[in-house]
Image (cartoon, helix red, strand yellow):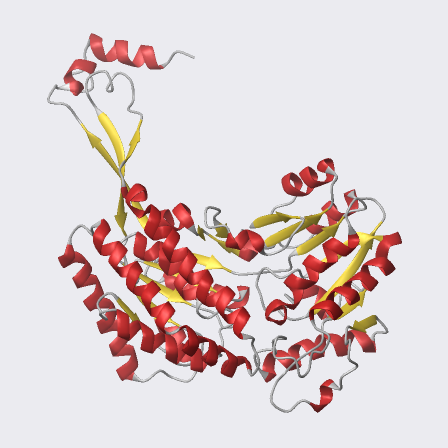
Length: 486
């Protein structure tokens, strides 16, 4: 994939970013050890900002999406961020404690002691996406601040109103030597990703992640990548179809499916296909009796993604595939003027070479494939790139175990979708094409910390006692002989 051509960034902005990074690094070095009190104070200020700016955040998100319900804005972006910060604040003192490790025999008997000290890395860059533009800044920031780091943020240019609120809120509650924000288009993001951070986290598309890694590699910056992929859903013959589809369609319609963890395709028993389709239609109708004029049904973020998704559906229709829009009030979606809404749409038994089966969906379109034997689902999932999540619905423990142990994904939910990201004590991250590294809870703290090995030796000359120092002698030979035993 060729790097996208970008307009040149202004020298002023690039110099500001370089200067900000240099200033934050110097401030970090001058500060010395970062106390628990300082870390907690920074997290408290982030929480305070989110609480005070909650309404402005919601209004900005609604502006950027043209229609995004306040409830979704609050539950996902605002409360989700506050919850992560509170969790880290509660546990940070325990996480900071030195971790004792066993010491090699016989050094342990002679008083040698080993431990790990978790040290801040320094300055961490956050490159955030547009789908949850607040949560994908402040949820990783919980671990970053808990680890004692300073932060530079590049929000998405696709949600400019929200990015401006982030910049205002950060400037209100933080000194720029602690946390600062740089808004702007892709050219700013490209320059930002090339800065010599001590760590960088990127959330977004796999294609862009390749450019992020290439830019980071020039300064050997370690990166955490939170990507996506096509997250499969297996519906077992043992599943309660209505209960399962209610949860699946909730996950598929929340934020209009613009979630990296959203169900991307279903695998259902062939004899239950019609039942699954009917159940999905009932579930959507119950949640959204209307769609076009319903302020609780989110719009696709912009025309570019609206055209992308409609292009998938047009290709499927032209190929003669069965495309099933779920439109309870029979509204005319061609008549909308101020939003880019697409009804939840099922595609039954699509061909494998369709774009909607090859590209991450990131929208309210849900293909449905069928299987005869359960083993086919495992083989099918394993034939695809490793996804960020995999979902199993059913009560068959052997099937559940097979899905968990024989497929590889960032995370798994059993009898639900998406909800594993809400568990602060579970690491969140992908594998392979769906990402690398993780955060949330103690894993986030460790991701953004340097685990420094510390060994303390006694005053005794252990090297001489063990024969490790020249001139080598009989003691040396005895030490070697002892270690060569099976």
